Image (cartoon, rainbow, N blue to C red; front, side, top):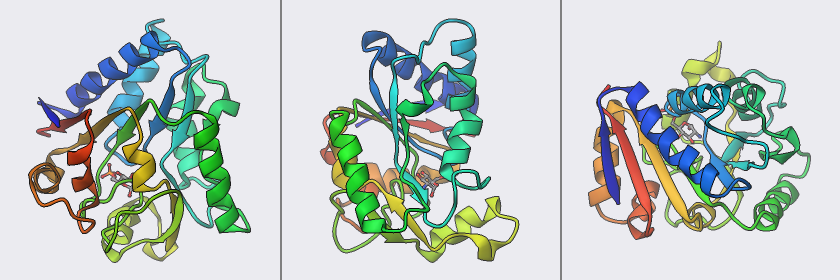
Length: 235
Ligand code: GLP
């Protein structure tokens, strides 16, 4: 694993954007795996800026997101579909039909997971995967557990994650208890992985990079991936 230190969240966003824009230039129809949360926001802002300056072209890019809350419509302002539209897709020249997220309102959640796996497979897998990390080491919504997950699945969120994410909801009891997330195997199959983390995540990033590889710290599995760059902000 490579570690890059950034002095600020803005610098973290620029360093990540350099990797993303280079990758898009090298492969215009690249498949990007994308993440939500507050940490990727400076990267998305930088990609929008670079698109505006003609440095990045998203016209052939495809995206698959890591996860979505169960029970929230895409129009709900806390859904991850809404987040992606508002923080990236609406401001770049991507074809909305090429942006994929699980459907949190699907009636049959198991069938929705299978559909999502088929989407990932039909795109040929992810070329460049962006990750944040949860305070408990989760990736996407793959929470600490007894085994590393394989493919897209429905998960019960832990209290730690519900508490951490309640800051975005007007009422903490509105935080969904279930989510659909790509599995650890899906993440590990990405050709290249970029993980962004702010200073508050230093301890868990240290455990993930140097600690025991255990499903109790889902991000520790990244030690087994051949091409991971962690960009850690001091802010
Ligand atoms: C959510 C997402 C994760 C993300 C995490 C960290 O739980 N499902 O993919 O990594 O939040 O978010 P933040 O960057 O806001 O700390």
